[in-house]
Amino acid sequence: MTDTTLFPQPARLEISGQPYALMKDARIIAEDRALGEALAGYLRPATGFALPVLAADGAASADNTIILEAIAASDSPEAYSLTASGTTLRLRAAHRRGFLHGFQTIRQLLPRQILSSEVVPGVEWTMPGLEIDDEPAFGWRGLHLDVGRHFFPLDFIKKFIDLLAFYKFNTFHWHLTEDQGWRIEIKKYPRLTEVGGFRAETVVGLSNSGEYDGQPYGGFYTQDEIREAVAYAEARGITIVPEIEMPGHAVAALTAYPQLGCRDEGYQVRRRWSIAKDIFCAGKDEVFTFLEDVLDEALALFPSEYIHIGGDEAPKDRWEACPACQARIQSEGLADEHELQSWFIRRIEGWLNARGRKLLGWDEILEGGLAPNATVMSWRGSEGGIAAANAGHDVVMTPNTYCYLDYYQSHDTDSEPLAIPSILPLEQVWDYVVIPEQITKEKRHHILGGQGNIWTEYMPESDHVEYMMFPRAIAIADVLWNHPQERNYAALVERLRQHLPSLDALGVNYRRTDEAASA
Ligand code: ACM
Ligand code: ZN
Image 1 (cartoon, rainbow, N blue to C red):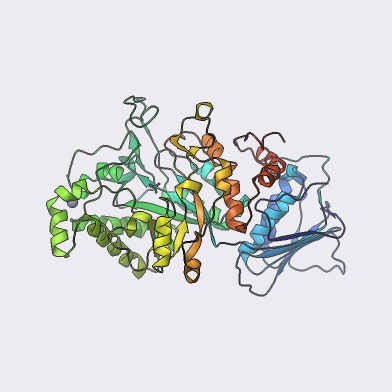
Image 2 (cartoon, protein in one colour; image 1 turned 180 degrees about the vertical axis):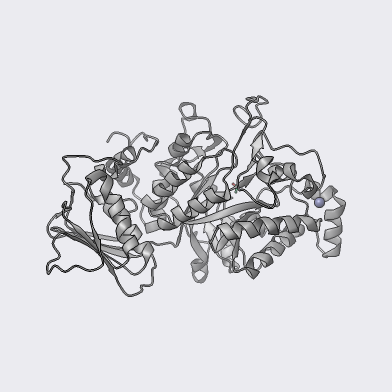
């Protein structure tokens, strides 16, 4: 008999009734054929069962059926319930995403060989008899991936999306533009990827080592690939939120189109990390024409309501020295360069709002005054999120102190692969409290949820991304789904000990944590 360890932990799970057995002659009963086929697709590779999907069942008995039962709309669009007993599995949900979460629960409850991509003979596909009623605590449960510092091909993006779905995340924040590489094809500005998608070489070791590898590096996603990723994610209940960085993290774009900077020339796609002084000029109107053209193409690719415009780490040195930027400060009656950034973001927000989209930005967008409808992603701790929520703005919490999965996983950094010099062990991730006490009760609804961030300066390979993700991303998934009041780390470790072999079955590289490794 398999155990009932689930990540994330369901809101309510009760063992009851007969054990459930999935039989070869089971039928899937589903009004929504595509949903039924999706479940059949999950169950087929390991079992070899070709389960038929029927709109209704002529048989009088529910034996050997998996019933996907649509129920009246519920408050939580992601809620589902599951009962398993005998040879009947009944999954109820009001919305597609609820069913999709239920599929992942079924995958985690069956013997873990179900995760194999090939037939596994001799397995009894059983689970304990049980009832589950489940819904998430937060509507925004995300993971971010930086593909600017290192580029990961579409195949890995799909694997990443599959893993998000497995843990009931619903948002993939795709960080697509950086100083070190522009990764999204824009038809109107082909040099963005032709030139901006590649760097001459990459620093070896930490950013200031002074040593370079001499290897040209780059890559980008075509618009066809992006459409494929968006459709792949949507089919799995995941929204992709694209990030197009402005005004900072723009050196790759400036290398392609130098007239968009304050200096007009002298740019080179960055070969090392850290913060660049060169950013988009805020004085030239053609910068806004360019950004709106780019966003126009991004909006056509990404149906996401939220569009992330970055806004972080934009030093003001160039703006201070630029006649066009200074003229803008004068003509708009702004006090300083911080207000100029605020003016910049407001202008972009107006453009996005007029097209029915919402602007999301890192917490630096608070400096110089927040755009009227902006949503803030709080990363420099929780302070930005507290200030924004108390001012009546929506917030996504991703404090670096709990959510930065590029930090070392162990205090014993010498025994870990090179990372940015900060430390975030699993135990601390597990203490992540999404809603800080400093947010007044009546403003707490502004906290949409949270996410983990994966910055890839020190992750040239996708298996290293997986290593940094896991198991920490699982703890984030659990916190965002349940937001448990009590956090028992020993219990988490024990649950992980049960669960982590599932990642082996999925072909995922993960850190075998000191305590949770010995399954
Ligand atoms: C960030 O980590 N610069 C948002
Ligand atoms: Zn300028």
